[in-house]
Amino acid sequence: MKIVLAYSGGLDTSIILKWLQETYQAEIIAYAADVGQEEELDGLEEKAKATGASKMYVEDLREEFARDFVFPVIRSGAVYESGYLLGTSIARPLIAKRQVEIARENGAEAIAHGATGKGNDQVRFELTAYALQPDIKIIAPWRDWDFKSRTDLINYAKEHDIHVPVTAKKPYSMDRNLLHISFEGGVLEDPWTAPPEDMFMLSCSPEDAPDTPEEVTIDFDRGDAVAVNGASMTPLKVMQVLNKLGGKHGIGRIDIVENRFVGMKSRGVYETPGGTILHRGREAVEQLTMDREVLHYRTSLVPAYARLVYNGFWYAPEREMLQTAMDQAASTVSGTARLKLYKGNCMVVGRKSDQSLYDEDIATFEADDVYNQKDAEGFIKLNALRLRVASKKSE
Image (tube, one colour):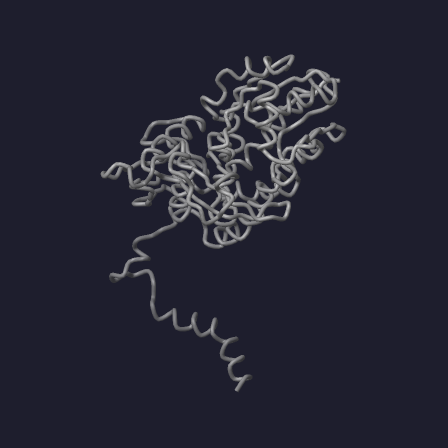
């Protein structure tokens, strides 16, 4: 039997690799998708093979991730609940897609992942896998084995001489990619406890950020960022440059309690420096260029779209349908945003566009020959008619 394991080299998947071998007497093909983890991928092949993997795939999917997953979410204005920009959620369908492809290429009967039975990631991985290969066998050890906690895994690792980057002092889990890094578990499980400052990796503390603000311009074409400070860039380069800028100024930290798809509330701490800048910049250009009713209707669809992404329905027909609508709405969002970065704040200070619907001659508070203010009286009375009728009926 062959099993393709989504492998990060962290605590869970390091244990899972060995456990799959022992439990299924199987050949384990390890696979890691490079979606922007940086140094976390160093030495991964050697570690996987030392733990028993027959092969190790480390695949650079960063450009595809930025272009085909992050950018569609950004141009849709997607935000889940209290400010979550879907960093972990949007990486899972790409990782699972390539995992299924590797299973086919190697004639593997099954795939496996390290998501727990309490979390969202199990749903995201498996919905994607079933959508792309309906008969695939999926092994989720957290739902099968006898281990009850990460402490049990740490003890197992010691018994089997498996090196893992988690200690009792720092038991929280991390997930990093081009869009963000997330932290959960451990000390963070108490929602009253502040995140330890030494936990953060992508951004400095706003208190320690430069005392001088920095301005950045972003050019957008149909809702996608195409240039930063006048320099044309690929989606990957945009993310890399804005992550560095945002991190320097402490941009993009949030601490929220969110509602998981499986039914429980969960506390998550996120760093999304580049994504926060992109989101604010796109909004600025959108305000100039998107028709009012299109904007309002698109915005009404954002919660449904964000839920689909969060819950793992990236390859579902309803998400694809909504994406078409979101992309159509974003088709006018072309122009330039100017933002000021300062001590954790990302402030829009300017925007311009050749497709701007803003007309200074109409909007002005000075004298104009376009807008007859007297017309507003009839407009108000017509809109007030139903209110006046209802009020009389209640007398």
